[in-house]
Length: 272
Image (cartoon, rainbow, N blue to C red; front, side, top):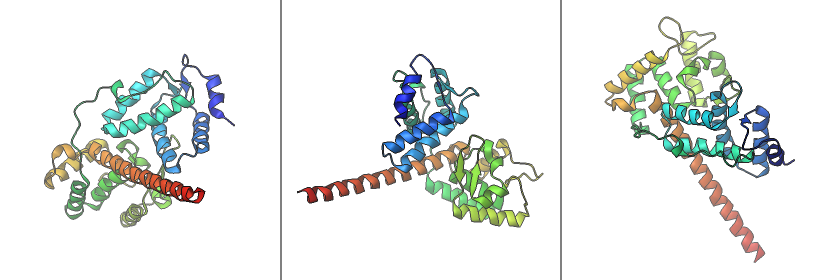
């Protein structure tokens, strides 16, 4: 069934799009039918799920709500390149719905000067320092923030149960896989701390750690490890995760194109 035509009949440029789960399922089906790579579709829907979580209860896509979403991405410290990829996924959905006049671009919201980025080498230096001079909790917390697509706000969702399952489930139906190497470290920590349930990362008083305490901890260790202060914060750790994922995705897409070209050349030889 051509769901794109169906949506174009129901929607026009004059009315806002209601971003429902049904619409997103239809868009996913549309991409699958167009033979889009599974990795690409997964990446698109990671970004679309972030938009869905940001939107108010009515879940309407308007110029105002989309502009607010872009501003929120910038406030969180996402790079221009990452925001471009978010925008690309949304523009695809807008085109699918027949809203040709509603189109996002980076110029929609001016960006401030690019903040310094934490390199992977600096991150490993920080991680090694914390492992040697800090607590196991602090070491695992920093590693988690740079390894999983999770914000401090949702950190309480990283529970003992989630570690055992190897998956964090968010309220907006998004899921984040815990890489096996990190999962084993977290489970070992859980066992040592004798945690039977609930959040893994707790303060000394037994409460989920808050943003200010985590921020102070990262800044302190960063300074002691000799890393530029502007690179040792929550934004920098999440940005490192995003850039790493982008680089891996680009390598996969490049490999896909090389294999596709190889296939076409082989077929051309057979055709003669």
